Amino acid sequence: MKHNFLICGSIGWCLEVFWTGFHSLLSGEPTMMGKTSLLMFPIYGCAALIKPVYKKIASIPTAVRGCIYTLGIYAAEFFCGSFLKYFGMCPWDYSKTPFHYKGVIRLDYAPLWFLTGLLFEKILTKSS
Image (tube, rainbow, N blue to C red; front, top):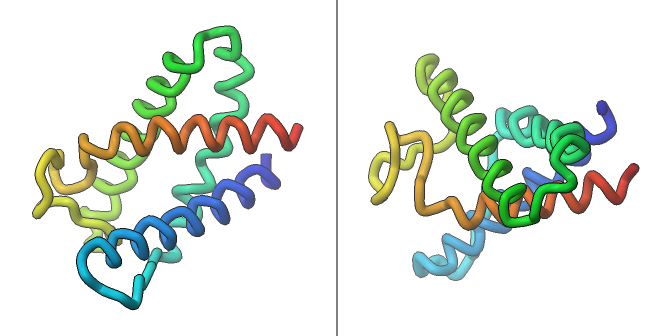
């Protein structure tokens, strides 16, 4: 589990840097500056829980598993974001975007979380 935690934390960081860099390009910043926070590593590392969840739901269709992962990611994002926001440490703030909930989750990210959950599933089940 420790190995998977480190893999998920590292991949999560890389995905976030890629995503924020891509977003900065779309916002007209030619530097494509990507960024993340040290606080995000343990949050992304918790995606290691996908592997034991997958073992229990492997027989369920992929689309349903993706929805389950999406809900799990939203729950983690909301819990972690709310906790960090309480202490003034939340590295993200969606309050100025449409479709946010309490500034800590974005409902329009559902397709992204769906695909991310399935990506982590694939990575973690390959490392068995």
